Length: 174
Image 1 (cartoon, rainbow, N blue to C red):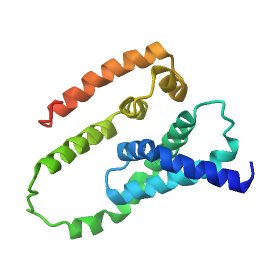
Image 2 (image 1 turned 90 degrees about the horizontal axis):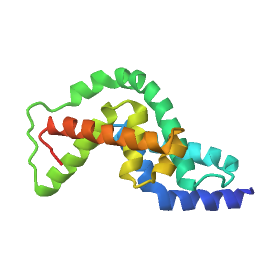
Image 3 (image 1 turned 180 degrees about the vertical axis):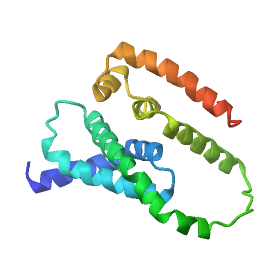
Image 4 (image 1 turned 60 degrees about the horizontal axis):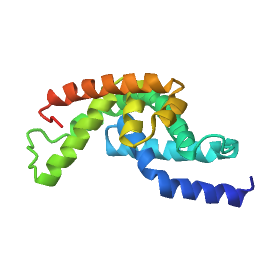
């Protein structure tokens, strides 16, 4: 693959699969700064992995694998990054500010609650939840996770119940 072909495919992936990458990012990173950092890391890893892509799997499967693996490595180092800057964030926090919620803000709050719940799941479950939200088939999910399609179905059923319980506890039943 020459450089122009690699760039063309990479641009296509970014244009057509940004939502997929953002779902992974939102599941692993809470704040906007961390989300941007992780997205850049995923994009870099996609670029570097592109020459190894052989069209043997769907491009969405490849992108998910790269994104999840990158996010797992990123998450491992997150605690070190956050403890370093914790005092700075505490000094800049404005205590006692109550947020006013419009309908749009409540909807965004529900989405944030969902992603917060997903971040609390074990990483294989979080990745399964994200793929389900993205509408991947059981086959595609089994390819990404390396488990059987029937196991995907069982895990999704349990996962839906667990997330519903977690969201119910926040006052956001869906």
